[in-house]
Length: 182
Image (cartoon, rainbow, N blue to C red):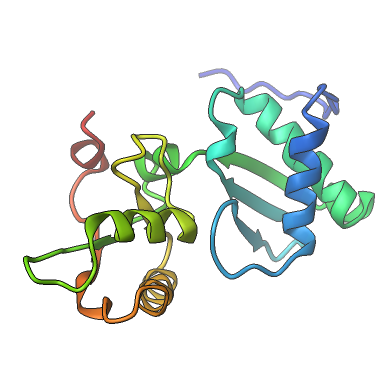
């Protein structure tokens, strides 16, 4: 394959001011759960890789997602901080699952006689930030780390008293293609 070297040309795309403002507010805030999930990794060079997992990206191009992330960082932090971002990725929850970025799954394992209903669990999962892109009746609550999944399980149990034994955390094993039906 040929090696192609190109200079950096910043492309400013017209992105949703409303979505950029919402993401900037999230960057300024300190929520412990919900969407968007913002993951920053700093490299030894001081540059950053930013992944923003958010179902609001649905039907938005990858280029527009990147532009929106960069704009939101500039709004929330500064132009200098935004210029430290080397890689900016925006994915929906199903896309992040397919990419293997969210291997931990929290879901209710209801049995007859449990003190909570499937509907109560569904609503609690959505409040926790579950994706409903695959259908509102089947919210998907996923996390990058076991610690994040366990924290969500704890919050769900507090949100629905006496539901602690209902919530289960699992980790994906095997090929991602098998997990998402590809």
